[in-house]
Amino acid sequence: MPTPSMEDYIEQIYLLIEEKGYARVSDIAENLSVHPSSVTKMVQKLDQEKYLIYEKYRGLVLTPNGKKIGKRLVYRHELLEQMLRVIGVEEDNIYRDVEGIEHHLSWNAIDRIGDLVEYFEESSERVAELRAVQKRNEESGK
Image 1 (cartoon, rainbow, N blue to C red):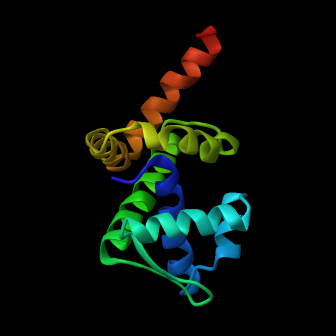
Image 2 (cartoon, one colour; image 1 turned 60 degrees about the vertical axis):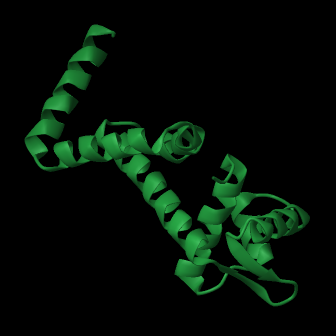
């Protein structure tokens, strides 16, 4: 399994390829706010670990395993954002909060969160009930 840092790179590479059709070192560096030299080192490591194929000056492509992991990482990120929205976390906090928790949850926990999000999204009444509880708690100072 990839490390949390490797996951961040695989996820970003997957997103870039989905969006643009390719992922350049400079784009990865910009999106992750790191130096291009750091990206090059990680891309070489990901190549060694068979998550992608990297050819200097030619670019990179995800291996089938890299694509599978990338897709799952994007799903995890989007699901956690969705859950935080459902439970009423302020929009300004969501991205940072997801970045802080996504690597610390098991895939079993992610699957259960998926069930929870599905449960709330099946009925707008459930979300309304949750909002009512939150409002009562805020008003009572909890």
